[in-house]
Length: 184
Image (cartoon, rainbow, N blue to C red; front, side, top):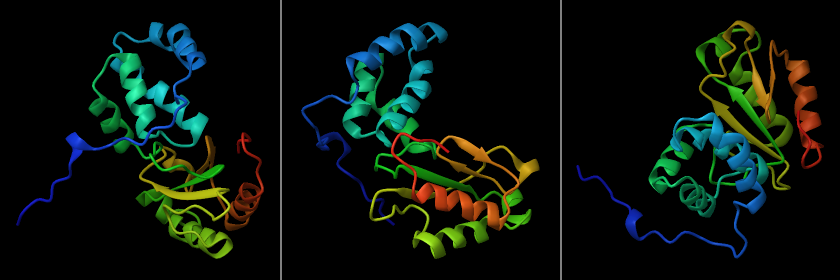
């Protein structure tokens, strides 16, 4: 069996004229993030969270800009973005619903599979998809670290625990009508 290769070394990164990493971001990171970590690589996660929050994804151009700002290899940034569920290179909806599908969330309460099915019924989404209006993205997550309150789901940065089908349906309805910049 042969392993397919991709032309990583010659990949062309789509670019826009305006940088994703703004002077204001750099100033805030220099003041608030860099002093908290012993190494520049240690600053990567909070910076990625800032960019993901600002743009609802971490575009490849932004990854290069972050690498340049921190003086680290672009591959370190891409490795981190591609490893963690909360980061994506594809823009997500105004609200991202992250349903935990660990064994605890599957076995407790109404179960994560049933929650995912409810989103499919209400919004026509499967995991990894975004509504046509760009409002809601559904993802599954490996573990949200709240097994004792399963089933759980993230709506943007807010964790909702001990979900019942009715409570989950209300949250999905709110997500479908949330305004950009609002958090659940």
